[in-house]
Amino acid sequence: MNRVPALFLCALLLGSAASAGDVTYRKDIRPLWEQKCMACHGEGSPYLAEFDENKDRYKELNRGPRMDTYANLVAFVGWPDSGALMRRLDDGSNTRDGEPGNMYRNLGDDEVERQKNLALFKAWVGEKGWVLKHFDELTRKELGRMRVAE
Ligand code: HEC
Image (cartoon, rainbow, N blue to C red; front, side, top):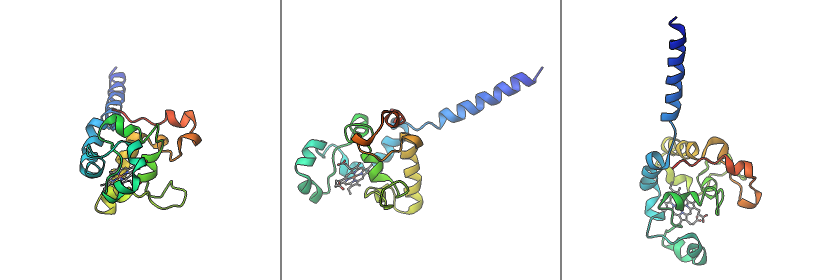
C-alpha cells in the first residue's frame, strides 16, 4: 500500500533536484559575468560590428565587444558569432590546438576557480551544445542543443 507513494515521492524529489540545478542567465550567468567579464564587455564597449571596424584601437583600450544583456551575450553563443563564447572560454579540451581560449584565464584567479566557472558556463550552454564551430560549419542539430536559458 505504501510502496507506490514512496516511489512517487522519490521520483518527485529526483525531478525537483534536477530542475533546481538548471543554470539560467538571471540566476547564475549574469552574476558571474558581472564579476569576471563586465569590466571589458560592459556598456562602455561597442557592439560587435563597430568593434570589428576598430579592433586594434579597442584591443589597446582593453575593450572587447559588448555583451551586457542576455540578448547581447547569446549572440556569441548561437548566432551571429556562433561558438565564439565556447572558443574563447574553453580550457583546451575541445580546441583544435589543445590550448585554452584566450578568455579562459578571466574565469578565475586560479585553476580551481576557472574550472568551477567554466563548468557553470558549460552547464548553461549545455554539455552537448558546447560546440566550438563557426556558423558555416555548424549543423542545425548542434545549434538546437545550445540551451542558454534566460
Ligand atoms: C581584461 C579585459 C577582459 C575581460 C575581463 C574579459 N574579456 Fe573577453 N575580450 C576582451 C578583449 C579586449 C577582446 C577582443 C580581443 C580578442 O579578440 O581577444 C575580448 C574578446 C572576447 C570574445 C570574442 C568576441 C568576438 O569578437 O567574437 C569573447 C566571446 C569574450 N571576450 C568573452 C569573455 C567572457 C565570457 C569573459 C568573462 C569570463 C571575458 N571575455 C572577460 C577583454 C576582456
